Image (tube, rainbow, N blue to C red; front, side, top):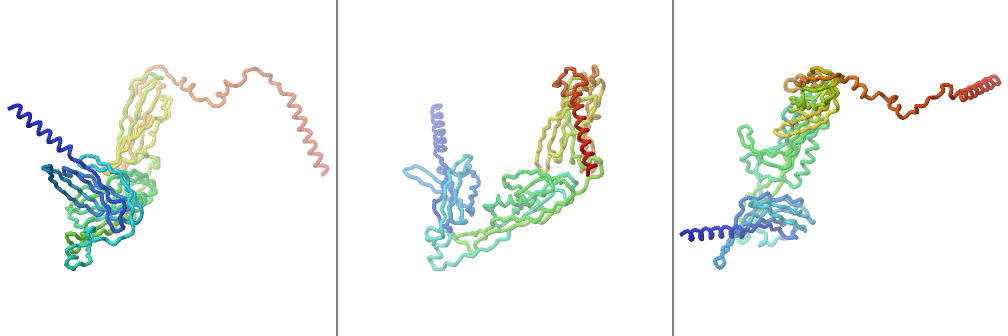
Length: 480
């Protein structure tokens, strides 16, 4: 009995492995030459299996992606079962000439499938042979002599393009986030598709949107993914096209013009037939409404033109709070929060004989997510105490900033307290400073004693020459 069960298990496993090994996936490209009025195809074909998951078909410059078909076939030969399942993507050429399809990879059933690409020559339009063009006419209508030109109707799209800002009034230096998105209703009946030049359009849109008087932190959208949102109790698919936070450098108002976006929109056949073409590609231009952001001056303050603007907190680290004079220590002054992290300058360090602070090492981290720019900037100081005593570091290092949420200035101050023991190093500190160029040349000058009267003969000759020149001048003036 046990042996029989083992035999059944082995047979099952063998059959399972044979089924998986027998599954073959490939990408089949269309012909090398087509006419301008013919379709090129890319087919994903799975033998002895089905397509459970598949990537988007590639965008090909020079072609419009116009729709998909599916097909399946089953064969039983001598008791051997085989099947083929295919998805066919159609492409319509936009121009004559040679179009290069670059190598690409598609993930099908969680497997990466590569295609080497190819070159396709697109020639002039040709008269289609009816049996080879199932999309251009209905053979039943042709047979009965009732073939009529197909009419296409425009289906009203339920979609719009919007440019939004999270704040319509900000202070100089305060950030606001701009988002450009396409919203398509979940009940939309019109068929929309991305055009081949979408990348070029978005590059031009970025130029139009980006103000010249702002620091930009771009969210770098690379994929046009769909997000589900609700607007006025209605569900939409939201495709983010551009997003960035801008930080005004002056109080000039910022105006965003009306932004256009061209999309492919399909008209549908008025009288669709089984073999006829069901839709026709057209162009739809969406436009945003203009937007304006008002920029306010910061309140009066001696450091108004220097302080960073944002909502910040301080975190700090110190290597030791008990030190001897002359013993070095490290201190980290780290600023965290929301704002233009790149614009945060070095904290103010008060010069004092009590401490020597050396220029800091700086590290910053910026995170752009959830429509906000957040991050941190740390200043790592190396310092040496010169005088014994107890010191609060807030008296020596601080950072003034403006908080746009509370609309007031605030100061980040250290909470660290350092206790220094030992002898004073003030004189050592003075001697270690640069005493100027006079002292710098002492080591290279000659230290031999010279007589103070050396060079007297030269002085006598020089005086005589001066007297001669003076006498000649008087002579020529009298003679004149």
